Length: 338
Image (cartoon, rainbow, N blue to C red; front, side, top):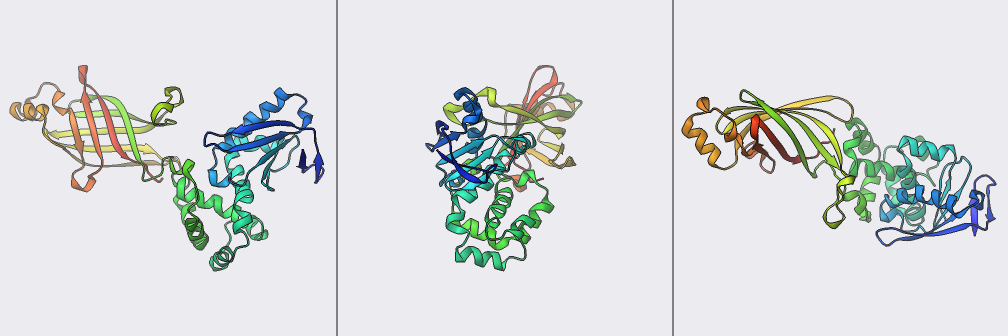
C-alpha cells in the first residue's frame, strides 16, 4: 500500500498488514499497518487500540474515511486523503492517557470528511468573516486549513458535552464563533452517536437508599452511565457514580422539604431544595391522616410518589419504605449543566 509517513515527509510503498474493520453502524474501513510492527498479531493490537475510538466519533466525521495508516514514531495525527494517519509513539500515548484520543480523531475527521466540502465554501468564509475572532491561535494562524476543525470541536462541546465544561467556556465559544455555530447547525449532520448520549436536558434517574432519623430521610444518591436500551443491555457495562446527598424532612402526611447537595464537574459543592407534596392519594396517606401525623409509629405512610408541585411538573420522586425504617429513593429528573 502507498502510505504517508511523517518521519520521511513522503508517501512510501509498504507491504502492510491489512485489516478490514466493520463498525456497528455498517461502516467499513481498511486499516493498513506498517510492517515494522513485524507480525500480524502485533499489528492487530494496534488496530484494536485505535478502531474503537474511531467508532466513537460521529458517523458524519467518518463519511469520507476509507483507510487508516498506522506507523511507529512520535508525531501528531493526520487527516485528509480519505484517511487517518496515526503514529503510535509518545504523542499518541499522551492522547490516550490524557483522555483526548476521540477529540484528536474528531479533529482529523473534520479534515477528512468536512473540509473538502466546506472549508472553502462561500458560506463558511462569510461566517468566518462575520465572527469577531477565531476559536484558537492555531485556527487563526492557519485559517485556510485548521479553522473548520478547531471550530467544530468547540461546537460539539457546547452542543453535546456542555455538562463537562465551565459556563465561562461555553460563553466564550458562543460569543467568539456565533456565525460558525449557526453554519454547523444548518448542516444537519449525522451526529447520532453524540445525540444519544446524555445532554443537560435529557432525562436522568438518581437513586439511593437511606434511613429515617425521626421524620427526616437521609440518602446517599447515585447515578449511572454506560447502559443501552434493549437486547444490547449489559449490566457489566454500568458504571455507578456517587452523585451527592439528599435530605427529605417530612412536615405532614402530604408535605415535605427536599434538600440536596452534590459536587459539580468543577469540584464546586452545589446545594438547593424545594417543598414537596404528594402526587395522588394512596393507603399510606389515608392511614397517616386517620392516625394523625404526630401519632404515627412507623414511616410506612411515606411510601409513594412525591413532586415539587406545578412549578416542578415533569419531575418527581418515588419512595419505597422498607423494614427497619430504611427506604429506597428514586428521583426522576434531568441532567445539569454545571
